[in-house]
Image 1 (cartoon, helix red, strand yellow):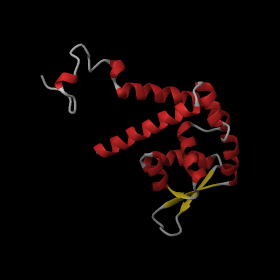
Image 2: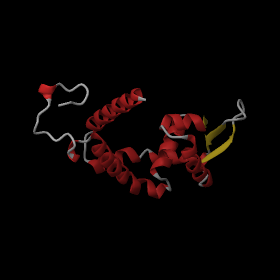
Image 3: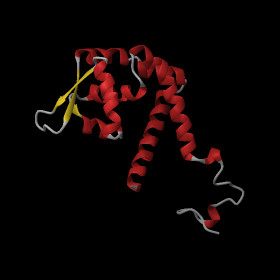
Length: 158
């Protein structure tokens, strides 16, 4: 009998179904992701933001301007995926896009005054999410830290 890597034969319980849906990390992550993003949706909607747009704004509220490639790296997205998000944020008046002055090949994204003002409204989002989840901040921070470790581990696989 062959065992998955790093699992000793003596450690594998013959009664455990390794393919049971509820044992799959990918399943738990997929459901948790959909459900958590679903909690954000009604909070973001009055601000005119989708969850992916909110993530872009979070990156820009930390630092603006940023090149499209920098935003893509921070969000672990392909630049081509970002383009429609940035166009919608620009159409909403929250960001502006222009050629980077130091590298004409790159596009820099900057917050507009409207985008900067939106940050004040967004400061209410984390407390609202915490309240809806009904979990302690320390518990959520622990989950975030564990997920960050998982993300790091997946990046080492590539």
